[in-house]
Amino acid sequence: MSLEAESPQPVLQSYVGFDSITSQIEKKLLKRGFQFNVMVVGQSGLGKSTLINTIFASHLIDSKGRTQPDEASRQTVEIHPFTETVIENGVKLRLNIVDTPGYGDQVNNENCWEPIIKYIKDQHSSFLRKELTAMRDRFIQDTRIHCCLFFISPTGHSLKPIDIVVLKKLTEVVNVVPVIAKSDSLTIEERIAFKQRIKDEMTFHNIKLYPYESDEDDEHDRALNESIQGLIPFAVVGSEKTIVVDGKPVRGRQNRWGVINVENENHCEFIHLRNFLTRTHLQDLIETTAMIHYESFRSKQLLALKESGQQQQQQHQQH
Image (cartoon, rainbow, N blue to C red; front, side, top):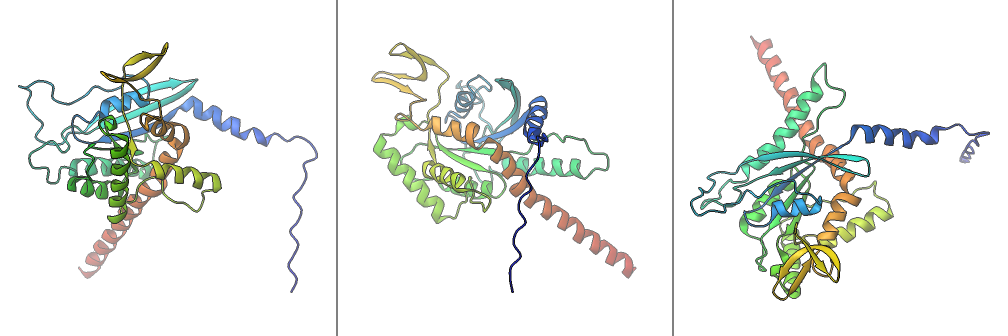
């Protein structure tokens, strides 16, 4: 039995113009702008607000930590969404930053993650309701969390039990990117050992972190993701202060023994985190949220609705 030969690809006799579709799409997207929703989770004092401001090179959010002795401590985890639009070279990005002050700060931290998980699921639920309405908007406002930056305290020992529990819960519903906060408090040797212990614990507890493996990835994507997975958790330092070093202004922290340049990869891994979030994986974080986390939530909700409808129908028939 002979195989049919593939028909040759037709050759265009003259310029048609459909190759301009990419510029047409770009023009529409630039006009509409982009939406990126980031949640930060970690105990007070780990520099969450500072790191966000450092990543996006502008003062976007203020610290929510206690600064005065008479200031009452938070009794519960609060959810503080904040929206700001930033523009770079004509590209408009609507940033929705969700802070979670109070997480891990109580004497009893049992179930302190529940308001965070509830908020993430509520955004999926809100999007699903808008999607299912008969007269839905042409462009549904997307408040689904695309990335959760999880801040790990730089103890140099291992993950806290609460970190393991919360990471397990979060990775089921959102793209989680763990970072070791204020990593300049660790020596280089301590940092390497601490990162390895965290990796071992993640593997032992089967905690699946972003970026995920995909059959659609080509060789370049796989190599890039492997390099990212080798860096996770990112050991970072944040700073909004500009310091002059050798006649050049740099963002960093001045200590008695010298300057920590946050954009120097020999000092910390901030530049790798920023490039990962904004230059290589921004669109993939958004797409993965829609195609994996939201799709999983959506299918569960629709199956539950279908089962509920079938039960009501059976009860009606019995009566």
